[in-house]
Image 1 (tube, rainbow, N blue to C red):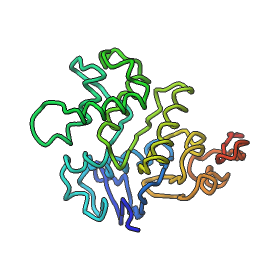
Image 2: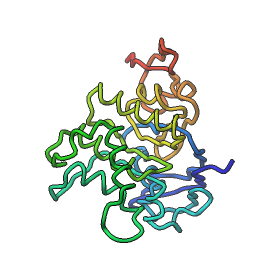
Image 3: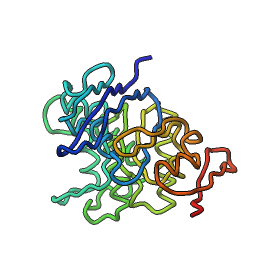
Image 4: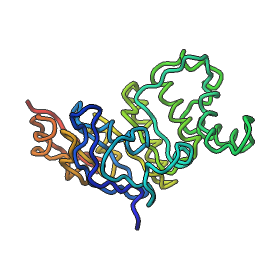
Length: 259
């Protein structure tokens, strides 16, 4: 089966100093992948390359068998959604306005919302528990409410692939779990491909099927969370000494630093 992303010898740097160094990997359709690693490892940069937001790389990145660089932003937005770590709005858009913006790539002509647009937006807000916020101004929301609104806008795009950069950084523990419950449901029920950058390896291990650890612009571990979260790998990746335990509910492992 053809991978949804095929990456071969990917190199990228914002300056002469490389951030990504010769990465080769495949991501299959329907996978739930967590990208973990220390600050500055290249996680967010790699995600932005997959989203088509960074272009000046060498090597090859293919999306569904096509060279990513040859696809227009509009064509990508019909099939792929990106949720950044933080979103700012200058104009006083409401939550409903923001979510409806997710429908823009699907509008053939004109600026008027269709019944399908409204239905998709409503479904996305119901799924993310933002329907009650629809008339509130985005800039007046809490960090967690903003992030759930941005997710709703991404889901309104009706994407095949969801790319998320530290999506729960501003959420409390309850909403972190609710957020990942939504991602798990999308992955299971819609076979949506999900790639998420996170620093919370315990949360990632509970939900992701595959974990990729990045350090120094290289993939240094790639496999199931149980395979990646070993004491040796944790020391190599994060330079910490930690104990690894099996979760009592059977959903992966969790770590506790010991020094």
